Length: 125
Image (cartoon, rainbow, N blue to C red; front, side, top):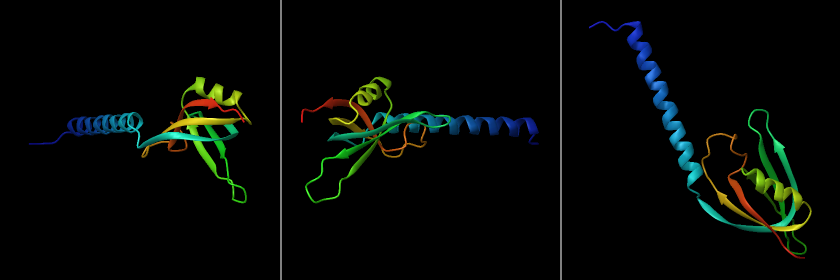
């Protein structure tokens, strides 16, 4: 039984196809189910559209600190353009961000952080 170059090439293409399918299924699963979710409140510091190939919205929320303590920053990503526009409109204001944490996202094309903001509410001071 001789193995031909054509047969080896077919196996290789099939193996690459299977790897691509498994990668796509893993990515969909990681983005569909969240590890945790919640809300964080603070002042909007920054929101920028970053990336060379994959443009993502990356933001920074300064959490309200207790007097005398160091302020903490919450770094997040936004996948929805409408939510990004609402966050941009609330720059410098006190807001509450609703987020979902997705651990294990395989590439930064979906966002640079594990925290994906899904909603924003402006809070009165």
